[in-house]
Length: 235
Image 1 (tube, rainbow, N blue to C red):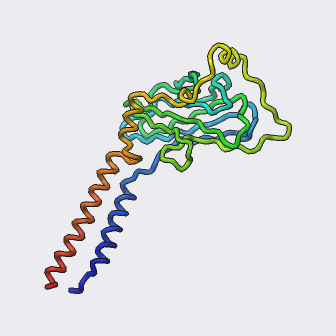
Image 2: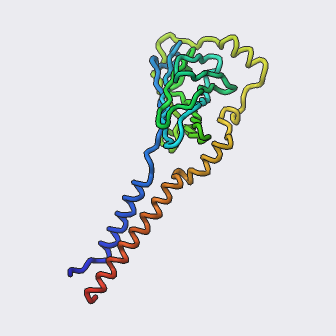
Image 3: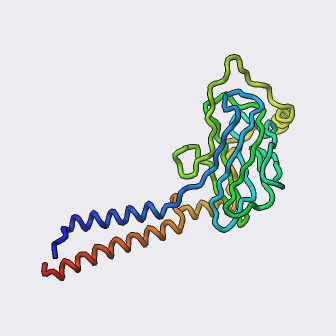
């Protein structure tokens, strides 16, 4: 029997571990956003969201959004969404929810924004809640992050476009209460959201880490078996 150099065994083990690592990390679900007029300072814009379901045991029952700077809750109106779902304004955005959707069914809905801000892109931090209490937190502003917020990229404003004044309800709200702090513009960490963060394990779920551990054991076993075979050849 031909000898197998230890360097080749090491390469084989590393390849096995890498394959398991790639297989153990699940494809990340996400929330997408698009608009019929994705342009800075555009008015009466229909913004549509597609919240992908990633739970295998429960359906989505609510989607909560924290609006970006330049869009007030009073400037957003509900357009359409899943049957029976209702729209509610919050201090920093809005929520859309109702009867739990079927497991695996994505939540698709749209809102009408009075005017988009004068910016290159606008993020919509999103909390996606399932019937069993699990929460997906799509709130990272880094699009390459593990939980990126759905972000709408905007074209430059049209020549002569100007920002319209705040809506009457938004003005009344602003005069009645102080401006929100940075902490208030971040979704509150509900008990379910906190549990979700703990389960992330640095970006990987418990199942993913279990798969990684199993892969490492398989790789080690392969090396040990190969060494024993070499020993049986009289080396």
